[in-house]
Length: 126
Image: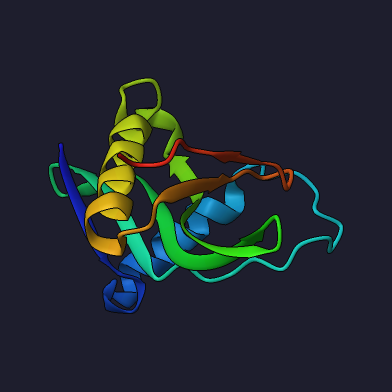
């Protein structure tokens, strides 16, 4: 397994199209136009050999908590190709994302955006 984190704009178009194609085939639920999704600034891509098998999208965003701005690293679009599930690839992508949020984005919080509009907020980094 190899994990790559790259700016979304630097993902080769053929790979980006393949990721989006598989993402659109997954059951993300019905949003009924409730949310407008932000584009990720980075992609975490998990490779097995020369095949991508899992990944997610990352962005840096200021949100408001109790009237105050708080910087978060947002995680969304977590997916693993069906035939590769249950092998820890998404977990590895999430660990890489958490490290990137802490070390590169320097955000004190991470926020996972789920398909039904709910979110899980990670603990503050020490």
